[in-house]
Every structure is written in C-alpha cells, then in structure tokens.
Image (cartoon, rainbow, N blue to C red; front, side, top):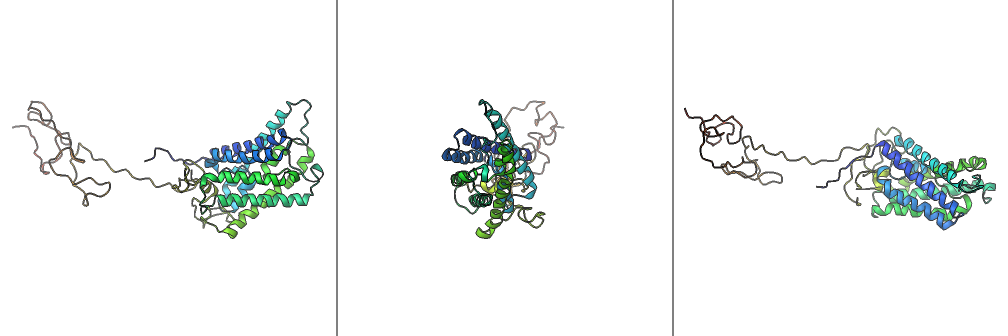
Amino acid sequence: MSDIVQDTPTTGQKFTAELLGTFVLVFFGCGAAMRSGGDYVATGLTFGLTVVVMAYAVGRISGGHFNPAVTLGAVLGGRLPWGQVGLYMAAQLVGGLLAGALLFGLNHGYEGFSAEGNMAQNFFGDQGTGFAWWAALLLETVMTAVFLWVILAVTDERNEVNVALGPLAIGLALAMIHFASMSATGTSVNPARSIGVGVFAGTDSIVQLWLFVVAPLLGAAIAGLTYPVLFGQGAAPVAGSGLSFGGGRRQAVPGNYEAQWNQGQQGGWGQPGSAWGAPPQQQWGQPEPYQQQSQPQPDPYSTPQAAPQQPGQWGQPAPQQPGQPGQWGAPPAQPQQPTQPGQPGQPGQQSAPGHWGNPDGDDDGRTQVRRPD
C-alpha cells in the first residue's frame, strides 16, 4: 500500500500555480529577448524551455496553461469547465503584469534606459518590420491554432505517448512557433505575454495590443471547437465545458485538460499522480476515489465469533478449532500459574464477565471458574 497521500488542489493552489508559471514564462522569455538583442534561437528556446520547466513543476496542480488562449482552447475542447476560466485567466494576467513590471524596473539599472519600444513587446506595421495588420492577425491566429491542436493532441487520453513527454512536446512546439514568426510580430500566441510587457512599452504598443489579444483567442477557439470534430472527442467532455455552459446533461469525468496532462500523477492536475496508465486520483469536481475498507479486527477480550461460512477466502480468517489459543481470532493463551487467592479468573475472587480469562456466557464449551461456595 502506497504511503503517498492523494489530495485535490485547492482553488488558491491553482491560482498560484498559473500565476507563477505565467510570471516565469514572461520574465525569462521576454528577458531573453531583451538581453540577447532579439536573437531568434536564444529567445525561442527560452520561451519553450520555460513552458517545459514550469509544466513539470506545477502542471500537476493546474494543468500548466500559463496562457489565456490555452485556457479558452481547453474549455471549448471539453477539457475544463467554464467556471474555472475566470480564475485561470486572472492568474495569468497578474503573473504577466508582475513579470513586465519587474523587467521594467530592472532595465532601469541601465543608465539612460527608455522602456518605449524596448520591452520585447509584440508589434506590426510601422511599429515593427512593416508587417501588415491583417497578415499579423492571420499569422497569430494560425500559430495559436496549431499550438492548441498540439496541446489537445498530446494531452488526449488516447495518445499512447508517455505522459512525461507531454510538456516537452508542448515546449518544443512553442519554440518552433517563435522561430517561424518572431521577425513578423515578435510572436505572441499568448495575450498574457503581450499585455504583461506591452503596457510598459509606450502608447504605440498599447494601441496595438488588441491584435495580440484577439488573434490568439480566435485561434484557440478554432482549435478547441474543431479538435473533437477532426480527431474525435476521446473522453467524455467535462460538465459545463464546450458549448454547454450549464453542463447539466454531461457527466463530470476525469477528462479535463488537467487530468489528461498528468494521467496518474499524485497530487494534482486532472489526475493529481506518476506514470502514464496509473489509476487516476480524485480531481476537482470528481467523486472520491475508491478506498479499500480495512478488515475489522477481533476483540481479544470478547467471546470469539463463529468462523465465516466460506473460510479461506481473501481477507477471511482460517477456520478455528476451539480450545487452541494463539490462532487469529482466538483469545490469548493464559499463563499457567498456581492457584492463588485473589487472582482474576482463579478461585477466591469473582471474575467480571468479559475480562481476560473469563469469556461472556458459559455455553460455548468453556469452563467458567466460579467462586467456591
């Protein structure tokens, strides 16, 4: 029997996990872009590695979205109930803004630093490399849709790839996306990433933020709605997910995004547990897992009960022979002592019923020691 205590993440723990994961993503990803002068390889790999590291670290708690677009795609794909969308997105925005504020403060350590246009913000048109707004909108939409298709596929319970490789595949997908789009838009696919640093990068950056909110959410919605159509639903949708806001006719099963990413992981996210294929742990909103009931232990101070009707079955005691102390379920053997007045169970003192050496009743084949007349 495992000594690991299986628990279900609380709302506060999920909020903290998403806030921390998004903070690390924005702080290290955008920080790498700023420190490397926009080097494609360094920036793309940093964004990908932060997703891998934080998904392994706190993914068991919240599912490791770190991105409002991922949360929207998960809920529309039937992996997460609508009731948790506000919690996730609020945590992600707070984490992104905290990272942006810290980068803003730290960069003022350089003498003469100006944050306007120098915060690794996203861009299009005249504020960037001249990439047209409609092309930027289409590019970010397509990139986000691909990202969500990868995530939904990797976390699909029908996917036989070891679940431990899931975060690695998702992180590599994000790096791949950066390599293909950094020169055009700076790569968003994440509204929290864009807002987190964009609000500190000047008025022009703030004016352009709408595109990096609309396009990722649009791409995520497309992927979330089309994945079940293109590839099948797999597990039954979570109650209150997809286009069913009430969820009254859907059964809550361990099929949400959290449960699928960490199938069998102890203590968290969808199936708070360790290797792929292990039995799921109880998740938020799921019924309590089956707990094996311990067998009742006999009371050595009471009269032994008759042997079960079918001895020898698992968990049942072996048939007992009367008068053989020391067997399971039999009263303890009595030490042989010379008869002394005043000893319990010996002549000269009344023994109370139910005490050691004096079973209740005198019709079970045992000899009761009574006080001599």
